Length: 625
Image 1 (cartoon, one colour):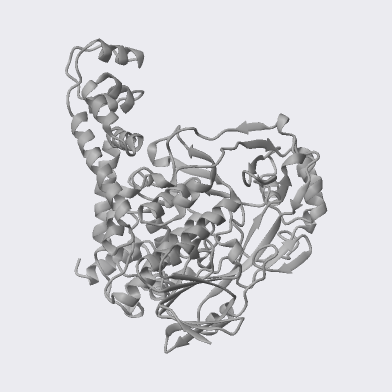
Image 2 (cartoon, helix red, strand yellow; image 1 turned 135 degrees about the vertical axis):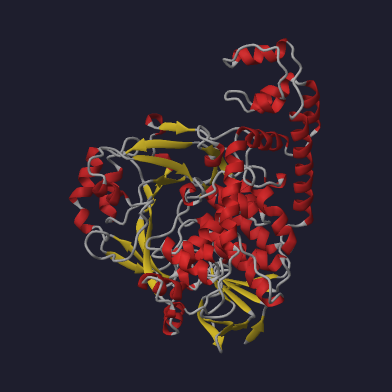
Protein backbone atom coordinates (compact mmCIF):
# COMPACT_ATOMS: atom_id res chain seq x y z
CA UNK A 1 0.00 0.00 0.00
CA UNK A 2 1.33 3.44 -0.95
CA UNK A 3 0.31 6.63 0.87
CA UNK A 4 1.52 10.13 -0.01
CA UNK A 5 2.63 12.90 2.37
CA UNK A 6 4.66 16.08 2.01
CA UNK A 7 7.05 15.29 4.87
CA UNK A 8 7.79 12.13 6.84
CA UNK A 9 9.48 12.30 10.24
CA UNK A 10 10.98 9.03 11.49
CA UNK A 11 11.11 8.76 15.28
CA UNK A 12 8.92 10.45 17.91
CA UNK A 13 11.59 11.45 20.38
CA UNK A 14 12.31 15.07 21.24
CA UNK A 15 13.78 15.86 17.81
CA UNK A 16 11.00 14.09 15.94
CA UNK A 17 8.18 15.72 17.87
CA UNK A 18 9.50 19.24 17.27
CA UNK A 19 10.24 18.48 13.61
CA UNK A 20 6.78 17.06 12.93
CA UNK A 21 4.96 19.80 14.83
CA UNK A 22 6.89 22.56 13.05
CA UNK A 23 6.47 21.13 9.55
CA UNK A 24 2.74 20.52 10.06
CA UNK A 25 2.07 23.95 11.55
CA UNK A 26 3.78 25.54 8.56
CA UNK A 27 1.30 23.75 6.33
CA UNK A 28 3.01 20.57 5.14
CA UNK A 29 1.00 17.36 5.28
CA UNK A 30 3.20 15.47 7.73
CA UNK A 31 3.48 11.87 8.92
CA UNK A 32 5.26 11.02 12.18
CA UNK A 33 6.32 7.35 12.35
CA UNK A 34 7.10 5.86 15.77
CA UNK A 35 7.68 2.38 17.16
CA UNK A 36 5.37 3.00 20.12
CA UNK A 37 2.66 5.65 20.32
CA UNK A 38 2.61 5.24 24.12
CA UNK A 39 6.19 6.54 24.38
CA UNK A 40 6.04 9.72 22.37
CA UNK A 41 8.75 12.13 23.63
CA UNK A 42 9.88 9.51 26.13
CA UNK A 43 12.47 10.82 28.57
CA UNK A 44 14.79 7.84 28.24
CA UNK A 45 17.18 9.01 30.93
CA UNK A 46 16.64 11.76 33.51
CA UNK A 47 13.08 13.15 33.52
CA UNK A 48 14.40 16.72 33.49
CA UNK A 49 14.64 19.49 30.91
CA UNK A 50 17.16 22.31 30.81
CA UNK A 51 20.31 22.98 32.78
CA UNK A 52 23.49 24.84 31.93
CA UNK A 53 23.17 26.11 28.31
CA UNK A 54 20.47 23.48 27.67
CA UNK A 55 17.90 25.70 29.35
CA UNK A 56 18.81 28.50 26.95
CA UNK A 57 18.13 26.16 24.03
CA UNK A 58 14.65 25.37 25.35
CA UNK A 59 13.89 29.09 25.72
CA UNK A 60 15.01 29.54 22.10
CA UNK A 61 12.80 26.68 20.94
CA UNK A 62 9.87 28.34 22.68
CA UNK A 63 10.69 31.78 21.26
CA UNK A 64 10.68 30.26 17.77
CA UNK A 65 7.22 28.76 18.29
CA UNK A 66 8.31 25.26 19.31
CA UNK A 67 6.53 23.22 21.94
CA UNK A 68 9.13 21.92 24.42
CA UNK A 69 8.92 24.91 26.77
CA UNK A 70 5.14 24.74 27.15
CA UNK A 71 5.16 20.96 27.55
CA UNK A 72 7.87 21.22 30.20
CA UNK A 73 6.02 23.87 32.21
CA UNK A 74 2.82 21.83 32.17
CA UNK A 75 4.60 18.72 33.42
CA UNK A 76 7.06 20.42 35.81
CA UNK A 77 7.34 19.14 39.40
CA UNK A 78 10.36 21.28 40.31
CA UNK A 79 11.77 24.40 38.64
CA UNK A 80 15.13 25.98 39.40
CA UNK A 81 17.09 28.83 37.82
CA UNK A 82 20.67 27.61 37.99
CA UNK A 83 23.71 29.89 38.44
CA UNK A 84 21.81 32.82 39.92
CA UNK A 85 24.94 33.72 41.90
CA UNK A 86 26.75 34.39 38.60
CA UNK A 87 26.15 36.86 35.80
CA UNK A 88 22.93 36.83 33.80
CA UNK A 89 24.65 35.17 30.83
CA UNK A 90 25.08 32.07 32.98
CA UNK A 91 21.52 31.83 34.33
CA UNK A 92 20.03 28.57 33.10
CA UNK A 93 16.49 27.28 33.75
CA UNK A 94 16.02 23.62 34.68
CA UNK A 95 12.85 21.67 35.39
CA UNK A 96 12.29 18.25 36.90
CA UNK A 97 9.30 16.76 35.10
CA UNK A 98 6.62 14.17 35.65
CA UNK A 99 7.66 11.61 33.05
CA UNK A 100 4.13 10.39 32.27
CA UNK A 101 2.69 13.89 32.12
CA UNK A 102 5.46 14.94 29.72
CA UNK A 103 4.41 12.15 27.34
CA UNK A 104 0.72 13.00 27.80
CA UNK A 105 1.27 16.70 27.12
CA UNK A 106 3.30 16.03 23.97
CA UNK A 107 0.70 13.51 22.77
CA UNK A 108 -1.97 16.16 23.31
CA UNK A 109 0.02 18.74 21.32
CA UNK A 110 0.56 16.39 18.38
CA UNK A 111 -3.01 15.11 18.33
CA UNK A 112 -4.29 18.70 18.13
CA UNK A 113 -1.89 19.76 15.37
CA UNK A 114 -3.51 20.11 11.96
CA UNK A 115 -1.85 18.43 8.96
CA UNK A 116 -0.19 15.84 11.23
CA UNK A 117 -0.82 12.09 11.29
CA UNK A 118 0.95 9.43 13.38
CA UNK A 119 1.75 5.84 12.29
CA UNK A 120 3.11 3.11 14.57
CA UNK A 121 5.71 1.05 12.71
CA UNK A 122 9.47 0.67 12.10
CA UNK A 123 11.12 2.22 9.04
CA UNK A 124 13.55 -0.22 7.41
CA UNK A 125 14.49 1.54 4.19
CA UNK A 126 14.48 4.89 2.43
CA UNK A 127 13.14 5.25 -1.10
CA UNK A 128 15.80 7.22 -3.00
CA UNK A 129 15.79 8.03 -6.71
CA UNK A 130 18.55 9.92 -8.54
CA UNK A 131 19.98 11.33 -5.31
CA UNK A 132 16.63 12.58 -3.99
CA UNK A 133 14.68 10.98 -1.14
CA UNK A 134 11.19 9.92 -2.20
CA UNK A 135 9.77 8.23 0.90
CA UNK A 136 10.20 5.26 3.26
CA UNK A 137 9.40 1.56 3.51
CA UNK A 138 8.37 -0.04 6.81
CA UNK A 139 8.51 -3.38 8.58
CA UNK A 140 4.75 -3.83 8.07
CA UNK A 141 5.19 -3.53 4.32
CA UNK A 142 3.87 0.01 4.01
CA UNK A 143 5.28 2.45 1.47
CA UNK A 144 4.95 6.11 2.35
CA UNK A 145 5.95 8.58 -0.35
CA UNK A 146 7.04 12.10 0.53
CA UNK A 147 8.89 15.12 -0.81
CA UNK A 148 11.19 15.24 2.24
CA UNK A 149 12.17 12.92 5.09
CA UNK A 150 13.57 13.79 8.52
CA UNK A 151 15.42 11.00 10.36
CA UNK A 152 15.42 11.31 14.16
CA UNK A 153 16.24 7.74 15.14
CA UNK A 154 17.85 8.42 18.53
CA UNK A 155 19.66 5.40 19.95
CA UNK A 156 17.71 2.86 17.90
CA UNK A 157 19.96 2.40 14.85
CA UNK A 158 21.52 -1.04 15.50
CA UNK A 159 21.11 -0.35 19.22
CA UNK A 160 22.68 -2.75 21.72
CA UNK A 161 22.26 -2.60 25.52
CA UNK A 162 24.87 -3.80 28.04
CA UNK A 163 24.07 -5.09 31.54
CA UNK A 164 27.50 -6.31 32.61
CA UNK A 165 28.31 -9.23 30.30
CA UNK A 166 24.66 -9.52 29.24
CA UNK A 167 23.99 -7.93 25.85
CA UNK A 168 20.51 -7.31 24.48
CA UNK A 169 19.58 -5.74 21.16
CA UNK A 170 17.37 -2.69 21.55
CA UNK A 171 17.16 1.06 21.33
CA UNK A 172 15.85 1.44 24.87
CA UNK A 173 15.01 -1.08 27.58
CA UNK A 174 12.10 -3.27 26.40
CA UNK A 175 12.12 -1.64 22.95
CA UNK A 176 13.61 -3.16 19.74
CA UNK A 177 16.48 -1.77 17.73
CA UNK A 178 16.06 -0.51 14.16
CA UNK A 179 17.96 -2.19 11.34
CA UNK A 180 18.49 -1.39 7.68
CA UNK A 181 18.87 2.38 7.48
CA UNK A 182 22.51 2.53 8.57
CA UNK A 183 23.48 -0.18 6.12
CA UNK A 184 21.59 1.46 3.25
CA UNK A 185 23.09 4.92 3.81
CA UNK A 186 26.60 3.55 4.40
CA UNK A 187 26.39 1.66 1.11
CA UNK A 188 25.73 5.00 -0.58
CA UNK A 189 28.88 6.52 0.88
CA UNK A 190 27.74 8.17 4.12
CA UNK A 191 30.23 7.92 6.99
CA UNK A 192 28.89 6.27 10.13
CA UNK A 193 30.31 5.23 13.50
CA UNK A 194 29.16 4.08 16.95
CA UNK A 195 28.51 5.99 20.16
CA UNK A 196 27.68 4.94 23.69
CA UNK A 197 25.56 6.43 26.43
CA UNK A 198 24.14 5.11 29.68
CA UNK A 199 21.51 5.45 32.36
CA UNK A 200 21.33 4.61 36.10
CA UNK A 201 19.06 2.28 38.02
CA UNK A 202 15.60 3.43 39.17
CA UNK A 203 14.75 3.19 42.88
CA UNK A 204 11.52 2.59 44.82
CA UNK A 205 10.74 5.67 46.90
CA UNK A 206 9.46 3.54 49.77
CA UNK A 207 12.92 2.03 50.30
CA UNK A 208 14.81 5.36 50.54
CA UNK A 209 15.73 6.86 53.94
CA UNK A 210 15.02 10.52 53.21
CA UNK A 211 15.72 11.51 56.84
CA UNK A 212 19.48 11.26 56.29
CA UNK A 213 19.51 12.98 52.87
CA UNK A 214 19.95 16.68 52.08
CA UNK A 215 16.79 18.20 50.63
CA UNK A 216 17.00 20.33 47.49
CA UNK A 217 13.99 22.60 47.08
CA UNK A 218 12.87 24.23 43.86
CA UNK A 219 12.32 27.93 43.22
CA UNK A 220 9.02 29.45 44.22
CA UNK A 221 8.82 32.41 41.85
CA UNK A 222 7.52 33.45 38.44
CA UNK A 223 10.24 31.96 36.22
CA UNK A 224 9.23 29.32 33.69
CA UNK A 225 10.32 28.04 30.29
CA UNK A 226 7.61 29.30 27.97
CA UNK A 227 7.15 32.97 27.16
CA UNK A 228 3.42 32.24 26.96
CA UNK A 229 1.56 32.11 30.24
CA UNK A 230 -0.56 29.14 29.18
CA UNK A 231 2.45 26.97 29.97
CA UNK A 232 2.50 27.85 33.69
CA UNK A 233 3.34 25.08 36.15
CA UNK A 234 0.25 23.15 37.24
CA UNK A 235 1.48 20.08 39.14
CA UNK A 236 2.44 19.62 42.77
CA UNK A 237 6.04 20.74 43.30
CA UNK A 238 8.44 18.14 44.73
CA UNK A 239 11.91 18.12 46.26
CA UNK A 240 15.06 16.46 44.98
CA UNK A 241 17.59 15.00 47.41
CA UNK A 242 21.38 14.83 47.67
CA UNK A 243 23.67 12.06 48.89
CA UNK A 244 27.25 10.93 48.18
CA UNK A 245 29.21 7.86 47.28
CA UNK A 246 31.95 6.84 49.73
CA UNK A 247 35.13 4.80 49.85
CA UNK A 248 33.17 1.58 50.38
CA UNK A 249 31.17 2.30 47.20
CA UNK A 250 34.40 2.88 45.31
CA UNK A 251 35.95 -0.34 46.63
CA UNK A 252 33.00 -2.39 45.36
CA UNK A 253 33.17 -0.83 41.91
CA UNK A 254 36.96 -1.12 41.64
CA UNK A 255 36.73 -4.76 42.72
CA UNK A 256 34.39 -5.62 39.83
CA UNK A 257 35.70 -3.14 37.26
CA UNK A 258 36.87 -5.99 35.03
CA UNK A 259 33.22 -6.95 34.57
CA UNK A 260 32.31 -3.49 33.28
CA UNK A 261 31.74 -3.46 29.49
CA UNK A 262 33.57 -0.13 29.42
CA UNK A 263 36.75 -1.71 30.77
CA UNK A 264 36.76 -5.31 29.51
CA UNK A 265 36.70 -4.42 25.81
CA UNK A 266 33.04 -5.29 25.30
CA UNK A 267 32.21 -1.66 24.42
CA UNK A 268 34.46 -0.03 21.82
CA UNK A 269 32.37 3.00 20.94
CA UNK A 270 32.70 6.65 22.02
CA UNK A 271 31.16 7.61 25.37
CA UNK A 272 30.15 11.03 26.79
CA UNK A 273 32.99 12.84 28.57
CA UNK A 274 30.68 15.19 30.47
CA UNK A 275 28.16 12.62 31.68
CA UNK A 276 30.38 9.67 32.60
CA UNK A 277 29.35 6.41 34.22
CA UNK A 278 30.03 5.98 37.93
CA UNK A 279 32.79 3.48 37.13
CA UNK A 280 34.47 6.03 34.84
CA UNK A 281 34.26 8.70 37.54
CA UNK A 282 35.89 6.43 40.11
CA UNK A 283 38.66 5.26 37.79
CA UNK A 284 39.35 8.71 36.31
CA UNK A 285 39.21 10.62 39.60
CA UNK A 286 40.90 8.05 41.79
CA UNK A 287 41.91 10.70 44.34
CA UNK A 288 38.30 11.65 45.14
CA UNK A 289 36.74 9.84 48.09
CA UNK A 290 33.14 10.87 47.28
CA UNK A 291 30.93 11.83 44.33
CA UNK A 292 27.69 13.78 44.67
CA UNK A 293 24.46 12.05 43.66
CA UNK A 294 20.98 13.52 43.16
CA UNK A 295 17.89 11.45 43.96
CA UNK A 296 15.11 12.85 41.79
CA UNK A 297 11.37 12.04 41.54
CA UNK A 298 9.95 10.66 38.29
CA UNK A 299 6.40 11.91 38.87
CA UNK A 300 3.71 13.07 41.27
CA UNK A 301 1.92 9.71 41.34
CA UNK A 302 4.98 7.50 41.02
CA UNK A 303 7.26 5.82 43.57
CA UNK A 304 10.04 5.72 40.99
CA UNK A 305 13.15 7.82 41.69
CA UNK A 306 16.10 8.51 39.40
CA UNK A 307 19.67 8.31 40.77
CA UNK A 308 21.39 11.13 38.91
CA UNK A 309 25.17 10.64 38.73
CA UNK A 310 25.15 6.86 39.03
CA UNK A 311 24.94 5.74 35.39
CA UNK A 312 26.41 2.27 35.11
CA UNK A 313 26.71 -0.81 32.93
CA UNK A 314 28.19 -2.96 35.72
CA UNK A 315 26.61 -6.34 36.47
CA UNK A 316 23.29 -6.05 38.30
CA UNK A 317 24.58 -7.62 41.53
CA UNK A 318 27.46 -5.09 41.64
CA UNK A 319 25.10 -2.17 41.08
CA UNK A 320 22.90 -3.30 43.98
CA UNK A 321 25.82 -3.89 46.34
CA UNK A 322 27.33 -0.49 45.54
CA UNK A 323 23.93 1.15 45.90
CA UNK A 324 23.46 -0.30 49.39
CA UNK A 325 26.77 1.21 50.51
CA UNK A 326 25.43 4.75 49.97
CA UNK A 327 23.93 6.77 52.82
CA UNK A 328 20.14 6.74 52.63
CA UNK A 329 20.09 3.87 50.12
CA UNK A 330 21.19 1.05 52.44
CA UNK A 331 17.89 -0.77 51.88
CA UNK A 332 17.09 0.56 48.41
CA UNK A 333 14.91 -1.59 46.18
CA UNK A 334 15.36 -1.03 42.46
CA UNK A 335 12.80 -1.22 39.68
CA UNK A 336 15.39 -1.81 36.97
CA UNK A 337 19.18 -1.64 36.73
CA UNK A 338 21.32 0.85 34.93
CA UNK A 339 22.73 -0.07 31.52
CA UNK A 340 24.86 1.23 28.67
CA UNK A 341 23.66 1.42 25.10
CA UNK A 342 25.60 1.54 21.84
CA UNK A 343 24.08 2.92 18.65
CA UNK A 344 24.95 4.22 15.18
CA UNK A 345 25.35 7.88 14.27
CA UNK A 346 26.45 9.70 11.13
CA UNK A 347 29.30 12.21 10.83
CA UNK A 348 27.45 15.56 10.97
CA UNK A 349 29.96 17.28 8.67
CA UNK A 350 27.96 15.50 5.93
CA UNK A 351 25.13 17.96 6.63
CA UNK A 352 24.34 21.49 5.55
CA UNK A 353 23.40 24.13 8.14
CA UNK A 354 19.77 23.39 7.30
CA UNK A 355 20.48 19.80 8.52
CA UNK A 356 19.85 18.47 5.02
CA UNK A 357 22.36 15.81 3.98
CA UNK A 358 24.81 16.85 1.28
CA UNK A 359 24.63 13.44 -0.39
CA UNK A 360 20.85 12.98 -0.60
CA UNK A 361 18.58 15.88 -1.42
CA UNK A 362 15.69 16.62 0.99
CA UNK A 363 16.88 14.06 3.52
CA UNK A 364 17.37 15.71 6.93
CA UNK A 365 18.96 14.39 10.14
CA UNK A 366 18.23 15.64 13.68
CA UNK A 367 19.18 14.53 17.19
CA UNK A 368 21.43 11.69 18.30
CA UNK A 369 21.80 10.48 14.73
CA UNK A 370 24.09 13.54 14.40
CA UNK A 371 26.25 12.58 17.37
CA UNK A 372 24.63 14.82 19.98
CA UNK A 373 23.34 13.97 23.44
CA UNK A 374 20.48 15.53 25.38
CA UNK A 375 16.78 16.13 24.89
CA UNK A 376 17.29 19.86 24.39
CA UNK A 377 19.98 19.59 21.70
CA UNK A 378 17.79 17.07 19.88
CA UNK A 379 14.68 19.24 20.06
CA UNK A 380 16.52 22.30 18.77
CA UNK A 381 17.80 20.35 15.77
CA UNK A 382 14.38 18.84 15.19
CA UNK A 383 12.71 22.22 14.94
CA UNK A 384 15.30 23.52 12.46
CA UNK A 385 15.11 20.33 10.37
CA UNK A 386 11.30 20.41 10.29
CA UNK A 387 11.22 24.05 9.20
CA UNK A 388 13.81 23.50 6.48
CA UNK A 389 12.11 20.35 5.22
CA UNK A 390 8.98 22.45 4.70
CA UNK A 391 10.90 25.30 3.05
CA UNK A 392 12.74 22.90 0.72
CA UNK A 393 9.40 21.78 -0.73
CA UNK A 394 7.81 25.19 -1.03
CA UNK A 395 10.55 27.78 -1.57
CA UNK A 396 13.60 26.83 -3.61
CA UNK A 397 15.52 29.93 -2.50
CA UNK A 398 14.65 29.92 1.23
CA UNK A 399 16.34 28.29 4.21
CA UNK A 400 16.11 28.87 7.95
CA UNK A 401 19.56 29.05 9.54
CA UNK A 402 20.55 30.66 12.84
CA UNK A 403 23.99 32.20 13.25
CA UNK A 404 26.34 31.75 16.22
CA UNK A 405 25.55 35.27 17.40
CA UNK A 406 21.78 34.69 17.23
CA UNK A 407 21.22 31.49 19.20
CA UNK A 408 22.74 28.56 21.04
CA UNK A 409 20.93 26.47 18.45
CA UNK A 410 23.06 28.26 15.85
CA UNK A 411 26.22 27.45 17.79
CA UNK A 412 25.16 23.81 18.13
CA UNK A 413 24.47 23.25 14.45
CA UNK A 414 27.50 25.19 13.25
CA UNK A 415 29.75 23.17 15.57
CA UNK A 416 28.28 19.93 14.21
CA UNK A 417 28.55 20.69 10.51
CA UNK A 418 31.88 22.57 10.70
CA UNK A 419 33.81 20.57 13.29
CA UNK A 420 32.11 17.20 13.52
CA UNK A 421 32.15 15.19 16.75
CA UNK A 422 34.62 12.88 18.44
CA UNK A 423 32.32 12.23 21.43
CA UNK A 424 28.60 12.76 22.13
CA UNK A 425 28.12 16.53 21.73
CA UNK A 426 26.70 18.40 24.71
CA UNK A 427 26.04 22.13 24.79
CA UNK A 428 27.84 24.37 27.32
CA UNK A 429 27.80 28.14 27.71
CA UNK A 430 31.56 28.09 27.03
CA UNK A 431 30.91 26.92 23.45
CA UNK A 432 29.23 30.23 22.61
CA UNK A 433 31.49 33.19 21.84
CA UNK A 434 28.63 35.61 22.51
CA UNK A 435 26.90 34.19 25.55
CA UNK A 436 26.18 37.65 26.98
CA UNK A 437 23.99 38.21 23.92
CA UNK A 438 22.51 34.69 24.06
CA UNK A 439 20.88 34.88 27.48
CA UNK A 440 17.87 32.86 28.51
CA UNK A 441 15.85 36.01 29.26
CA UNK A 442 16.08 37.55 25.78
CA UNK A 443 15.52 34.55 23.50
CA UNK A 444 12.19 35.98 22.33
CA UNK A 445 13.82 39.32 21.47
CA UNK A 446 16.40 37.47 19.40
CA UNK A 447 14.19 34.97 17.61
CA UNK A 448 10.43 35.55 17.68
CA UNK A 449 10.42 38.04 14.80
CA UNK A 450 12.52 35.64 12.69
CA UNK A 451 10.02 32.90 13.44
CA UNK A 452 7.12 35.17 12.52
CA UNK A 453 8.71 35.84 9.12
CA UNK A 454 8.51 32.16 8.17
CA UNK A 455 5.07 31.67 9.73
CA UNK A 456 5.97 29.41 12.67
CA UNK A 457 5.20 31.84 15.50
CA UNK A 458 1.41 32.11 15.68
CA UNK A 459 -0.71 35.21 16.24
CA UNK A 460 -0.95 34.60 19.99
CA UNK A 461 2.83 34.50 20.38
CA UNK A 462 3.42 37.48 18.11
CA UNK A 463 0.81 39.53 19.97
CA UNK A 464 2.27 38.66 23.38
CA UNK A 465 5.76 39.52 22.13
CA UNK A 466 4.69 42.90 20.76
CA UNK A 467 2.90 43.81 23.98
CA UNK A 468 5.96 42.82 26.00
CA UNK A 469 8.28 44.94 23.84
CA UNK A 470 5.95 47.93 24.09
CA UNK A 471 6.07 47.68 27.88
CA UNK A 472 9.86 47.25 27.85
CA UNK A 473 10.31 50.38 25.72
CA UNK A 474 8.00 52.38 27.97
CA UNK A 475 9.81 51.18 31.10
CA UNK A 476 13.21 51.97 29.55
CA UNK A 477 12.05 55.53 28.93
CA UNK A 478 10.85 55.93 32.51
CA UNK A 479 14.12 54.54 33.88
CA UNK A 480 16.05 57.30 32.10
CA UNK A 481 14.30 59.92 34.24
CA UNK A 482 15.72 61.37 37.44
CA UNK A 483 14.81 59.92 40.81
CA UNK A 484 13.28 62.32 43.35
CA UNK A 485 16.04 63.53 45.72
CA UNK A 486 14.25 62.65 48.91
CA UNK A 487 14.81 60.66 52.05
CA UNK A 488 13.73 57.40 50.39
CA UNK A 489 16.59 57.65 47.87
CA UNK A 490 19.20 58.17 50.59
CA UNK A 491 17.73 55.46 52.78
CA UNK A 492 18.11 53.07 49.83
CA UNK A 493 21.67 54.20 49.11
CA UNK A 494 22.81 53.91 52.71
CA UNK A 495 21.14 50.53 53.17
CA UNK A 496 23.20 49.24 50.23
CA UNK A 497 26.51 50.68 51.46
CA UNK A 498 26.55 53.92 49.45
CA UNK A 499 26.81 57.51 50.69
CA UNK A 500 23.75 59.73 50.74
CA UNK A 501 23.56 62.22 47.88
CA UNK A 502 22.01 65.55 46.93
CA UNK A 503 22.82 65.14 43.23
CA UNK A 504 20.38 64.22 40.49
CA UNK A 505 20.46 60.53 39.62
CA UNK A 506 18.69 58.69 36.85
CA UNK A 507 16.84 55.54 37.83
CA UNK A 508 19.02 53.60 35.38
CA UNK A 509 22.18 54.92 37.05
CA UNK A 510 20.97 53.55 40.36
CA UNK A 511 20.11 50.16 38.87
CA UNK A 512 23.55 49.92 37.26
CA UNK A 513 25.12 49.84 40.74
CA UNK A 514 25.88 46.53 42.45
CA UNK A 515 23.44 45.58 45.22
CA UNK A 516 20.63 47.78 43.89
CA UNK A 517 17.87 46.06 41.94
CA UNK A 518 15.28 47.43 39.57
CA UNK A 519 12.58 46.59 42.11
CA UNK A 520 14.43 48.65 44.75
CA UNK A 521 14.26 51.69 42.47
CA UNK A 522 10.66 51.03 41.45
CA UNK A 523 9.68 50.99 45.13
CA UNK A 524 10.92 54.57 45.69
CA UNK A 525 9.67 56.03 42.38
CA UNK A 526 5.85 56.46 42.42
CA UNK A 527 5.54 57.13 38.67
CA UNK A 528 7.54 54.04 37.71
CA UNK A 529 5.78 51.94 40.34
CA UNK A 530 2.38 53.00 39.04
CA UNK A 531 3.39 52.01 35.50
CA UNK A 532 4.75 48.58 36.42
CA UNK A 533 1.69 47.81 38.52
CA UNK A 534 -0.48 48.51 35.46
CA UNK A 535 1.26 45.70 33.54
CA UNK A 536 -0.88 42.59 33.81
CA UNK A 537 1.13 40.27 31.54
CA UNK A 538 4.72 39.15 32.22
CA UNK A 539 5.39 42.03 34.63
CA UNK A 540 8.34 40.40 36.43
CA UNK A 541 9.89 39.28 33.15
CA UNK A 542 9.73 42.81 31.74
CA UNK A 543 11.33 44.33 34.85
CA UNK A 544 14.08 41.69 34.86
CA UNK A 545 14.79 42.24 31.17
CA UNK A 546 15.30 45.97 31.67
CA UNK A 547 17.46 45.41 34.73
CA UNK A 548 19.77 42.98 32.93
CA UNK A 549 20.20 45.33 29.98
CA UNK A 550 21.12 48.19 32.31
CA UNK A 551 23.51 46.26 34.54
CA UNK A 552 25.35 44.60 31.64
CA UNK A 553 25.10 47.44 29.12
CA UNK A 554 28.85 47.79 28.54
CA UNK A 555 29.41 44.07 28.10
CA UNK A 556 26.42 43.74 25.79
CA UNK A 557 27.54 46.59 23.53
CA UNK A 558 31.08 45.21 23.33
CA UNK A 559 29.82 41.76 22.32
CA UNK A 560 27.51 43.27 19.71
CA UNK A 561 30.52 44.93 18.06
CA UNK A 562 32.43 41.65 18.14
CA UNK A 563 29.44 39.80 16.66
CA UNK A 564 29.20 42.35 13.85
CA UNK A 565 32.82 41.62 12.91
CA UNK A 566 32.01 37.90 12.79
CA UNK A 567 28.99 38.63 10.62
CA UNK A 568 31.22 40.30 8.05
CA UNK A 569 33.14 37.03 7.62
CA UNK A 570 29.86 35.08 7.47
CA UNK A 571 28.71 37.33 4.63
CA UNK A 572 31.73 36.52 2.44
CA UNK A 573 30.31 33.57 0.52
CA UNK A 574 32.44 30.83 -1.00
CA UNK A 575 31.15 29.57 -4.36
CA UNK A 576 29.53 26.16 -4.34
CA UNK A 577 31.78 23.31 -5.52
CA UNK A 578 34.89 25.46 -5.04
CA UNK A 579 37.97 23.35 -5.92
CA UNK A 580 40.37 23.63 -2.97
CA UNK A 581 42.68 20.89 -4.27
CA UNK A 582 44.23 23.31 -6.80
CA UNK A 583 45.25 25.85 -4.14
CA UNK A 584 48.82 24.90 -3.31
CA UNK A 585 49.08 28.00 -1.09
CA UNK A 586 46.74 26.27 1.38
CA UNK A 587 48.11 23.67 3.78
CA UNK A 588 47.51 20.04 2.87
CA UNK A 589 45.27 19.58 5.92
CA UNK A 590 43.26 22.69 5.02
CA UNK A 591 42.71 21.45 1.46
CA UNK A 592 41.51 18.10 2.77
CA UNK A 593 39.21 19.57 5.46
CA UNK A 594 37.77 22.29 3.22
CA UNK A 595 37.12 19.79 0.41
CA UNK A 596 35.33 17.43 2.80
CA UNK A 597 33.11 20.05 4.49
CA UNK A 598 32.68 22.58 1.64
CA UNK A 599 31.96 25.61 3.85
CA UNK A 600 29.46 28.16 2.62
CA UNK A 601 31.34 31.19 3.95
CA UNK A 602 34.73 32.40 5.13
CA UNK A 603 33.31 32.52 8.66
CA UNK A 604 32.43 28.82 8.60
CA UNK A 605 35.79 27.95 7.03
CA UNK A 606 37.59 29.74 9.87
CA UNK A 607 35.98 27.40 12.44
CA UNK A 608 37.00 24.15 10.76
CA UNK A 609 39.70 22.37 12.81
CA UNK A 610 42.93 22.27 10.84
CA UNK A 611 42.24 25.46 8.86
CA UNK A 612 44.75 28.06 10.07
CA UNK A 613 44.52 31.89 10.06
CA UNK A 614 47.03 31.85 7.20
CA UNK A 615 44.70 29.60 5.18
CA UNK A 616 41.86 32.03 5.82
CA UNK A 617 44.03 34.92 4.64
CA UNK A 618 44.64 33.05 1.38
CA UNK A 619 40.90 32.52 0.91
CA UNK A 620 40.17 36.18 1.65
CA UNK A 621 42.60 37.25 -1.06
CA UNK A 622 40.97 34.85 -3.52
CA UNK A 623 37.55 36.27 -2.65
CA UNK A 624 38.79 39.78 -3.39
CA UNK A 625 39.08 40.80 0.28
